[in-house]
Length: 510
Image (cartoon, rainbow, N blue to C red; front, side):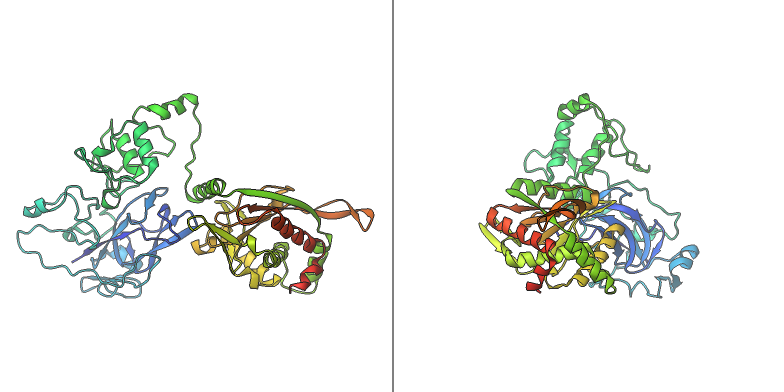
């Protein structure tokens, strides 16, 4: 007999609380093996494929592509040990003694847990065994111990089930689908629609997000009349939007609901600030989420918290370009210009460690860091990302070139992991690739400084007392004025410029 298990969106690490479904890799009715990737999601850090820790038949999916789900929300349900239809068995497994075997011939008893984890979820403990159902006793679907009972119970035990349960309704063991045709109706973007509930006369409303409160307030929706679909009845933005859409057109439970585009007008008339925005003119609304939302949050926080200042200097990079040409002529692998600039930065930070630090305002302390984890700005189709080269202070130019190439390729393909995008202590920003000379970069919070490099172009320059055409670059340093004053920042930038103009200066620190 099949046992239906619910797989929830796991904690993807780095403090991430939500993810957007980019692409489903399985359909309802498909047979999945243990640790098979089932969905591709995008977080504020990167895109990752999420493996399912159970093997069996997919009985339901929760959320369509483009839907944002909080960590802990249901992703899909899997019937473990269910008989597999002939077509599905040919794709992923066989039927042996009434129990499904996945790819590799693993039975339901063997694939109760993969033991693998992303972050925050594991499958080492097997699910509870089902007991035999007595005649006349209502049948209940097996569910993980962390989930509340499904809504809509029948039989004598109905009075013991909370009516405000937030868990999605799953098929019972006797009705587990055996072929792709047994597809339950899907509600896009949510496990269950919000349930209207009696008003809460007292007590707090279970809402965390201020955006949810504002959306409800602007549209005259009383949150006390809603039960949320989030953990412990938490009211999510999707709950409010669903309530507004269904205010004039109730959703039939037997129909498949298709979510409208994000920019679509709400069914309920706009009031308050929303009406004022509508009167000001229509336009395209682009949600601040994923990488774009993470960039917006981080840069806004940097501007709010860091009293930054910027200084800049022009430098003659002719000798640096000649040195790079000579290095590459000596043999492979090639040394990149970014790697040489990174090597100069690590040498400068050894002389001016104040700029490789962070500020702990709660303790009112400046924390100087022993290691240099060098971030570098990379523009991708998904937006601006800052991959981090670990222990850059211990790498030579050749090692730095290889690491920059590896991380840049991962950024372009969208395969950077959260660990590769966090933990930086200093950032190098080569905005010269955009054909600009100068900039005043925003510090990558919680770091204390960022070096910006403009384009290197031929310009008139006084060299050895004579006017000549030289390769000139503008260097800019934005720094946190809490960690140092202008003298330290100026000394750092001047040392960088000296190394650019005379690469032999680096020999003193090698």
